[in-house]
Image (cartoon, rainbow, N blue to C red; front, side):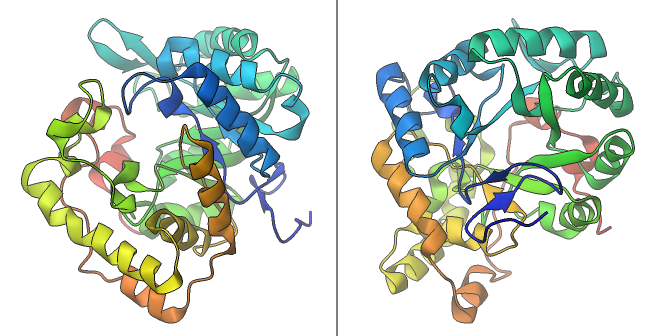
Length: 338
């Protein structure tokens, strides 16, 4: 299946999408304090008008609020996008847990479709692997939803190569969503080769290092009380100081091109291969414009050498222990090359 050169494809037989997508989690929770629904809806619609065709949400974001928000934004525009949502993470009184039982997956999708105001999603992700449910059973339930016409393609999030192979033996996996950026290059050694073996796209979330790579990340004490980054080890104490040279290097390359650091970080990802699709999150239309423009930025060998400097590796875990425990064990411990 041929893909127009300005587009990328979600897996071997998935939809063609713009090179830069839009992550919407921050419109409901996680960052920057309270959101403005009207501004967020305007930003989603503006992104679509600018050629962004992959819109990403999840049922856990804002406990359903984010899907409702996206559904409102897509009124009259649904056929212009590949809509992705996720299930498997559940908010409880004690925090997040994972529930990927087949019966829950089916019910969760029906609830998502109602909030999104649509009869199908183009990409349905298993948000995390349930340690108590074989991935084959979870993916089998998702495959049933494909056959029912409620889901077009299946994805996984934060999985290692062994889990991906097991899942792909049940049903084709169109995409794996992983944190991938100059801030986190863990997927490169083991996961990317298996993605290419199975014809699976890599959808890169937090491609700007949760804002750190833009050079505009404030100190933890200056963040809103409910800002997730206050709890992330890479943003605090000695780790933050040790990580600043990464952002400095991105800015140096950006200055060379007359670009923004965010554009360089996205261009670096796009340069990794046509099967890598970043989904930066933003609430602002101007940032959408800048992110989309990153697709036109061409890095040269000198840029690559400077950005790929092995001395520039982040200090600290990506998540605090409770959130690290929710990851596929292969991801959590760092899997060896395939």
